[in-house]
Length: 441
Image (cartoon, rainbow, N blue to C red; front, side):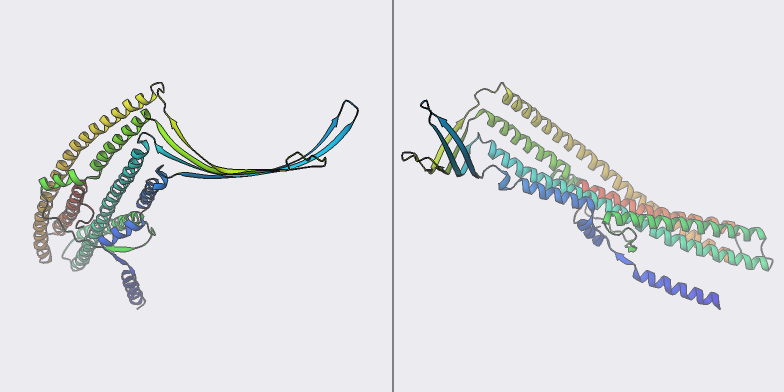
């Protein structure tokens, strides 16, 4: 009676735990990662910094305005001795107040400021592309981890089923042994198989728990949070190699970065060339100064207060006619850097075409293996069902039934693995073509 109560309590507890588990869909997982993944958070902050750098406040187009002020106080005692023997002591105090404002603006610097501002804009665009690449890599990593949880979850279910079959077989062998219809060896073999299936189930349970923790880390949430995943897989049906290659040449993030680097090198070349031109600036300001003086010796002709104020403006021209060849060297190096980036772009294009072709072959091979494993699983299933009937009728021995059981379990496991490997191969192909975000997961 106590065992029945305990079993019932455990079943109720297990049901409550199962109901409390989160049903995490693939799209929900992607949305959570986009908001909470640590790498995505960092790269989004980098984009914000690049946006700040590309603002008008960092462009050099705005004037500079400064203000200065000061105050001085002086208290002096002077002793003057004349030739006729007279000595005159004089005490003088003075204070000075001053204030000024200055405005400076660069009118022309050989267009260096203009190209530098455009470069900052392109650096911001480059940071967005880099952020998109990090997001794509994270989503691919996330989905790979998600499908790993799904694969192990299905293996877990299959192993539980296999363990249940082995327990039924052990029970049957015990009855047969009790009635003298089989040997003790058959019963002991069945017991060993139950133990082996139990160990395999424990190992799979551990792998499932580890894979869930790995997925939670990518999601940027509590590591121990439990959940269920969707084990279904949907494959794209409209993928063709020419279309994938065409999309990769337009949307691949690595290629887009190579193109941006060429634009940035062009701006560097123009910025360095601006060193050959003069710079023209304008400045203006307003100043106010006052000096108050007091003395204990009467001086009707001296000034007690002096105040000056007024505006001033000016124009400056600076031209570094010859700087020892530094500007020339910078221009030459900028041209070489531009040429290097063009070479890198050509290399990226070649590598991209190779990678897409390789990924396509991998995907097609994975689809073929998937179909082959499916047929193999169906064949082993029919063989296991036939063996199960024969075993119940006593037409085959326990060992033969176990072989059929193992073969069927292995074929299901292999099909399960092939199913997810094909999907991951498809996701890799979509990432190379720049179509991963927004695809059917």
